[in-house]
Length: 82
Picture 1 (cartoon, one colour):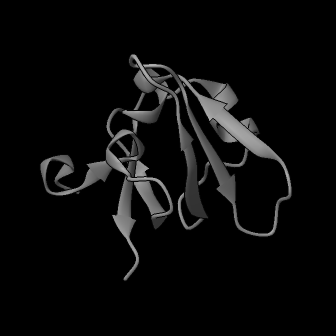
Picture 2: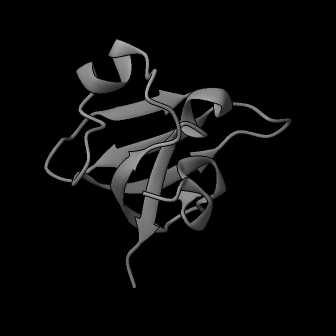
C-alpha cells in the first residue's frame, strides 16, 4: 500500500466521515488497536480543538467519543466516504 496517496485522520474536517484503510507505519501503539481504530472501521470527525489540540472522533456503532493527539491521528490512514 502506498501511504502517500491516502489522508490521515488529522486532515478530516468537522462532520466528515471516513473508513480506516491502514496505518502510516508498521509500529502502531497498541492503544490504537484497543480503542477500536482498526482497518474497516467507519469514523466521523466531531470536534477539532484549536491551537493544534486533539481531535475528537466517533466510530460507527460505538456511542463513546475518542480523543486523539495529532501525532496519533496522523498515523491512521483513511479513505473519505462521499
